[in-house]
Length: 394
Image (cartoon, rainbow, N blue to C red):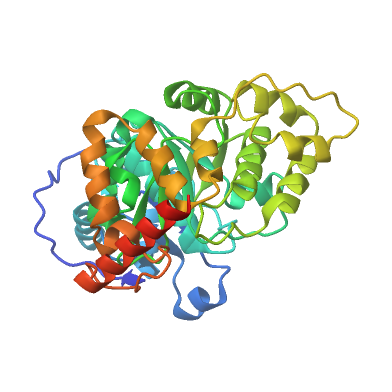
């Protein structure tokens, strides 16, 4: 965390006769209660509106002036020369503006409520980057489940967010300057991929941008509208952001635990017992949500175990984004995928199935050597042999 504690002449072309200065940031936390921050005298941790490698720590005169701008507009006329230079430095970093209606204006700063303050700031960053571009999203699963009383564990390793399906690529591009790159998978040339995973180059936290959630049967746009319209607000690092309401969030968590693992891959941690447990915590109201989102078929056995006293009538078919995962062999898994994708996507998928790069198969492909940007010819031929052997067995 870099520090800003002294003014210098930033050389920014800011009109010194402007009326006021206000604080802006993509994320901000009061960290005086953290031992390590207190030892260094840092009072606030902030993420500016311009891409940076790490949060900025404010202390001393810098923290005092910035917090004055948080409390309300500060007239330029009352600033001393050193304070005015500091205000201009803030503006250069993306921490102050002369526009009181700036979309990233900060009017209150609280202590972190997530066990990881940096993780909390990244939630705020994702929402802020989307908000300034008018991209709608809803955070799902994650630490919100703990706050909603749906799981005991406080922390999550990554960030899951359901995004307007038509604008995922825009959000991906908005986060790229902050240090996230796309982690390619075999299926991302088709519409079978339910999310885009952004891998960090410096922040240490993956972001999964979901266009849909496996097991949900509604169309992507319709499902997003249902989740968005029922979302509740939570504050992350001075930024209010939409989070899936408890029944919807619990449903997604149960689907995550119940989701079948494709042939040759390890099952998800938790499994059916965790799925049943989170459904019980949700209460019987989750049955109606499952029906509305078309997820009742995927969760039928778990709903019956969680609520044996309830009459559960499944009204939706099992969605393809669930059934293709349940194929008994890898060969049938690939055939089901090929049968489902659009004709323009089939040649590209066949090519990547038969002659992939390492980024296509990642480290999950059985027998593939991890690491590297491409598979060797020997690795690819060995993989072809496994595929053909699987087809013969089928």
